[in-house]
Length: 366
Image (cartoon, rainbow, N blue to C red):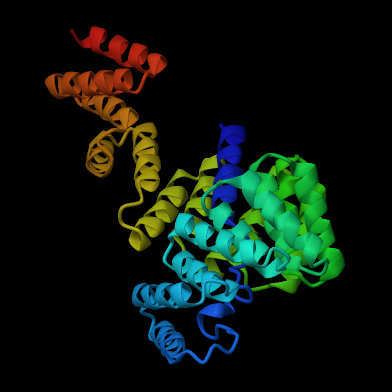
């Protein structure tokens, strides 16, 4: 049980880490100050002025429309296309962002900032090979670009190229020895490689450089836990919770750690704190229901799994667990309905093991 839970802990920490890639602000300064060649075109000047005003007002959609009009008047200006790419990225429209950055790069292929911004958009589209190529071009064009190396490390990590990722972070640290993001991300690579002692050393350095970053404390807690330093790991998670008391993921991490130590009551309290912040956090409800089932709080478990099903009607395991709780309460007809729903859902999802389990539970009751 403990090993399983510790694996879940590290896995969820990887998810929390997310993309440690800085948004390409420098590359995208075009949206507020597009540089143009004198064309004596008052219409173009007016459009660029309007675009800047709309960006400053936060109206990105209208600003994009205005800059696209400007691009039709000055189709050879890469900064206009870069600016549109930035605004699309700000709105989460990464595919559109990629297309505009590619136009900017077509006009100015040796601009490292454009290449970095393209890598950022590609990474957010989860096109990791393309993102890595763009980041590599950015580092070749600007050998002092720390963020491009960090971005490269992230996307190589996503491709399971851990040695390449580690090297990218090493290069970033060589350029900027006080870059806590690089140390933090390097620690994640070492955790993934199972080198927990080295991960602790690297993450402690990150914590010194960024003592108020909860993400660093989460990774440090994971490394300590996997290295057998349970009390220190819990202390790191508690520190993360102090730094970000409104972060539900931090509370889930603490709950998982407490659950791995068989502190089930403490785990439930932490899961409930996560739910207080994010009321529809399905995974927290699932964990609470499992703990209630384990403690034979069958009524509580039934209520919790009904909430899980309300939030996620396709969660077959919730139907199965609710069936177990109903069976324990001698509510046979309801238990049969729950197991039948579990069976149907498992079959729809192609989960043969789950289907066999649900079918066996049904046969016991019929």
